[in-house]
Image (cartoon, rainbow, N blue to C red; front, side):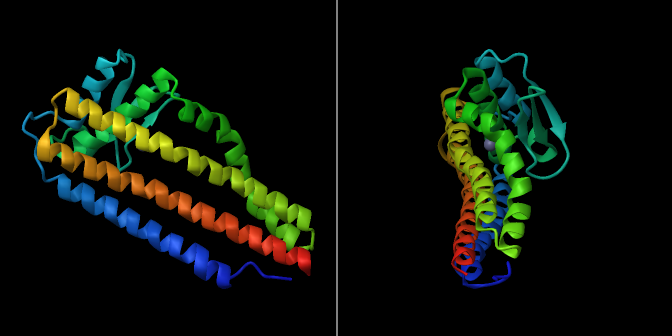
Length: 231
Ligand SMILES: [Zn+2]
């Protein structure tokens, strides 16, 4: 019987992915801070830029609120609200305008029925059930030598990993919409547009890292389940 602890699969798979994720988190914070010092010429705030993009897309019904915390900005499709952190909402910086435009991009994705976001919304329940049941099923399967149960746990974990995978096109596309909108509306140009793009790229990397961590754990569970079958 293999105990679910530290072994080679942890060292070669999970640990590097976790280090990457920690670096990505640090990187997005420092990039955001750096470009929060770049004041934009138009004087538009994060709120203004999100509002403009929403209105240009006819999304007058989407509200914009302020939320506490750092980098807590998000679009809530159920309430149809964009929530911007205080360092984004009222700031006229390349970082703030970039993040706000990205969240507006998510609202536009919902409005136009962007396929990956529809797919992602559809698999939310299964991925939530998956991430709740995966480890208990897996552990019971391993401890009581029930390989099928362990594999079922792995499959459930896979559903959560799939969710992370589908998150990538959604995030990249929201950033692309943001940069396009900032450019075509003339809100940002040249170096300021580059600054906003850099913040969005750093943010996208955190989603790549989250997928890497999830995938590493998925492969690891699969290997451990396979070992228990052979015993
Ligand atoms: Zn996003």
